[in-house]
Image (cartoon, rainbow, N blue to C red; front, side, top):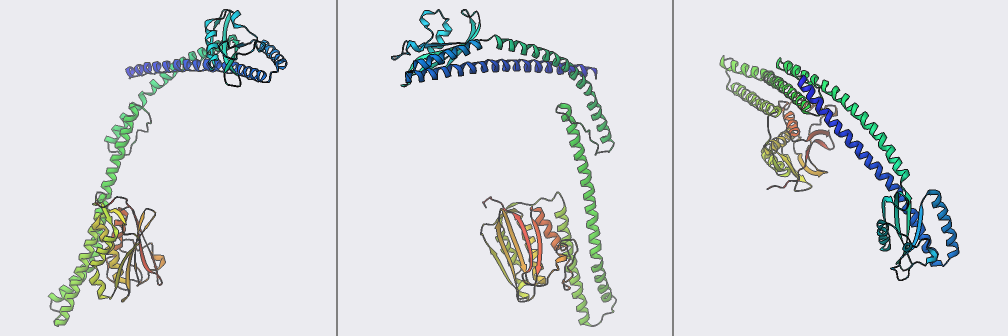
Length: 485
């Protein structure tokens, strides 16, 4: 642990040291740039104002007023310790009249840098420089701007020169404070490095304890460590492993419960029909029934009960598969209209027995979903079988398919027994039979299977029922934009 402690201590110290120094240097540079920039802006605004007033005076020919203005500017500049030069451009065809200038550059030995910014001003550009000036015997900031005539030609220039002493003092003072801050930051960095290095041992111990508890079977144990480093990633991996082990344990328990429920449902639902079949079979075998007509009736009942048991077991097996988390749908792009028409055709014979008419209507012939053809067909067959079972003779069964805001809405409507409104939410429960089923045969699992199929496709199913509008099962599927290949 000590090796890790000192290694992390050194790493933290170096990183925080470099970071603190870089931040100090960056802020010092930033502050210097701002101070000099503000002073440049001040001199530039002053020089631009004088250039504008000079141009206006030249255009108006008002020399007397300009002389008074120039005197006021010089008084202001003297108070601010700033020099303002107004010079003419000898290269211009119409140079600034000497009456409007206050400096003859030809008679003064100025530095090359000053001549350079003057030449830039004569070419229409604003330029400045800062350096130790031999004339003023101190560091000065010089700014030159152009004076244009009414034709846009540069007839002269204004040079504003100001001392940098105050700005330099400000920057020196700031650098002193920044040095103190950096020293304080370095001290803080060392303390932080010591603190975090000591904290490093705790998560390692915590991860070790968690691993031992998980090995003992306590899968839900978490490290409760949140770090953005390798230890944090290791702790996160341990927590993910914990979640996966908990999920595996829950899945095992769910599978076991699912198995128990399946056998419980089978034994519960098959007990009565098996008892009935056994009773009829015993009666036949023991010779209690001698009339041939009675024997035929018993045999028909036995066959009917066997058919019901077969249908029940089939529904239970389908429901068991649908509720299995590992069950995978064979998804493809389906046109719900085609599936509905296929399901409707498969029930034509049953519908003819009650003289029922079946219609499949739609708003858009391209009503596509991503689904399993067999399961979606099974869903519609279940709903249509129920519709046939509970419809009044000589009525009709309608299937309508519509597109609404990215959804495919399929409605199966029949006109027969009305489901009371208080039972609408219960019809999808396992083994539930509506109060007015009228003695119709059924396992009570068909709508449960239908609901599971819909949910597996990311949709919803609901029911409404009234004498005027009939019983409607409404299926809501998410639409897909993929085309059938």
